[in-house]
Length: 88
Image (tube, rainbow, N blue to C red):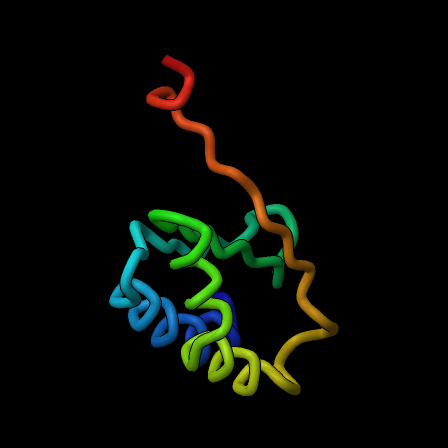
């Protein structure tokens, strides 16, 4: 099991994220090498949809629920997904 944060907090919020306008996909992964390390991968149709999500109630709810469950503040990074379709 991955613990309280992933099961209690992330699971329901990830389901809600998938219903946000502009969400193409969202996945939660857990590190096999570093127990307790998680990565959430989100794909959005555009930057505006992503910003609306980050400013919205789902992210606020997840942040509030995570208080006391995480060892420290999350390490956040915004990346640009590159697929084989983008390279053609």
